[in-house]
Length: 192
Ligand code: GLN
Image (tube, rainbow, N blue to C red; front, side, top):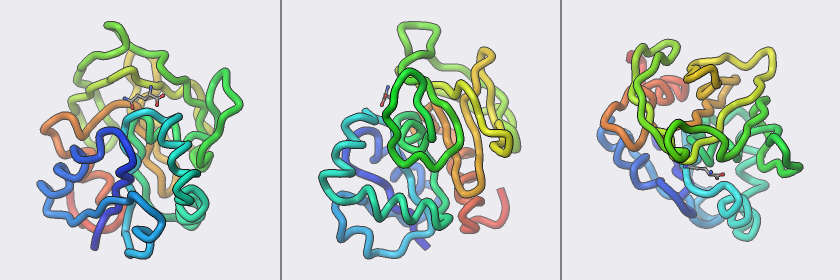
């Protein structure tokens, strides 16, 4: 049982560390042949979505990953990863995977120059620490998309079928609850 972590750019090592603290194996996805390895779930980390989107295409990772997402592979997208999953970006025609029915606004959210820390309720977990870094937020969610967290009247976490999209960085705090929640979605953990 293992989780693939997209490792082109951004905060991927922190996700790998969180998984290893949960005694879950992971491997890095950097090139197309890495996708030959079976995975039970995928993490799309924070970073720069424009750069990641371009690298995904250049490295021919985009089409096979999109197919896996459409086929139901459980995915956790954090921050830029959420942007990669979104079906719409506000004020932009850009769409990356487009598998998560939400409209996401980039770089639009934050109390202090776009970065801040708070603790907030997360549906199904309770209070969790949330670190926002030049974070996007979810401006609108499809009717069958479950809203899991709202901070300052902005949607910051959603679930739709196999996809968990989060505008903050659970991998940058010590709290492992969101990674546990995701592993539960993959069926790797039977209890939280
Ligand atoms: N603003 C970044 C983007 O548009 C996301 C920020 C982050 O991942 N911390 O890709």
